[in-house]
Image (cartoon, rainbow over all chains, first blue to last red; front, side, top):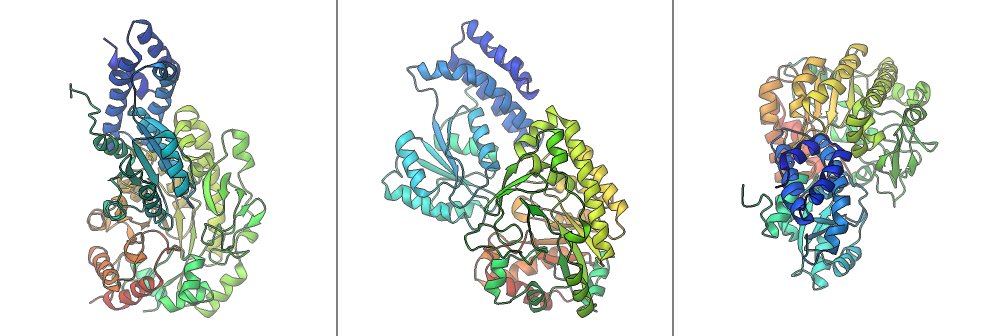
Length: 218
Length: 352
């Protein structure tokens, strides 16, 4: 039985070294890396995400936890990558062409990693061609497009059209987000989902993949 | 009423003859689309009541223009509108720019902070000749300084948002030192603008995302409130606070700090003007709330009129409201929609 509450406390306090030690300890006690990830990190970060959504904590506290979680993931990732079972779903994210803003995208990336997803960060100013290429190379289940500007949000439609034209629409779900966007815009351009904020992005991704992040106990 | 009388009445929470019209910023590309040569011509054509000036800043030795008069003019390939058009490099505050867009901050240490704490350069920051000529030709208008250099937002930008968040836990002293330096800089440079004849100062200090403030209210109370209060107490004209995003939870502290009004009130971020008017209308002058992301970016003028009517209905009762876009008049705003917004408030915004 892993010490979920201990991990949760360490993450909320941002204790980087202690999280690394906790992870090593859990593995040394015979827990599998998959169990540590799913029953430890994902559930703890999910609780943190819920507290953020409810307004109990703010982005700095979420980032503090995400930074500590990374220390644990550095221990787990080499083991998980050797695992014969596919340990996570992939999400490719990028800020669309013409847009250089990455705060929102980075927050989404951190929250998704906290949710147990493997994140492929394509960066900023990403063209439709690069998104298509990334889907073919990395084969993510989800692609997330970010835009901060009203001028660049239009590029999202171009990218979604390029994905369809490349015959990849059935292989990947698409979500969009960014300050000037809303649900109506997302539907209008044919996106599969719209995320109003970073915490919502994790829920949307999970729902598109029909995953239950909170597990059977919740 | 003259435009100035109208604006001053609103600042005093009295009903003027009609709701004044305010812009913090009109993009240079939008100006060209409007078919007017200068910002002054645009203000006159649109019926703006307050003439706004900015202050020059420098990026890698290149100056921005005086608010709306880019120098040099924005290159067509620039992603930026006008104020930061063509900027590439690190500016005097430690903000990094690429093609006119902010991409991050470089301040991580005390040495960085002092390296990127700019001199006052008061005479060089303002084009006093232009301001004098505006005031001579249009003495009946109100004048305001709009400067997106509030102490907390500028600290966040100069650190970079994520690094700022980490520094909240790892190096809070450096954050306070940064806000302290920027507060004093803001006060001194704003005082000079007041000496040049500004009726009020709008402190641009972005503190919110969609649906969430940047930091907890308790952090805001520690990091923003005392500095805002010092700014208000140190400047002899009313100080307004501009922020995009959701800042509802901070408003009681803004009132307590003596902030006279707020600009932005971004509905898409969760700011409900009707509720804010009910809760804070007696204390805060409200400027903004017109949707600049969707409604003003399309050509259906009936939708524009409805949006103006909604804002007037929610904000104008008893005075204390100036119609304005929730953000700025950026390059995606449809010129006809903008003109219609300004025309319609002249009619629908009349009191009595």
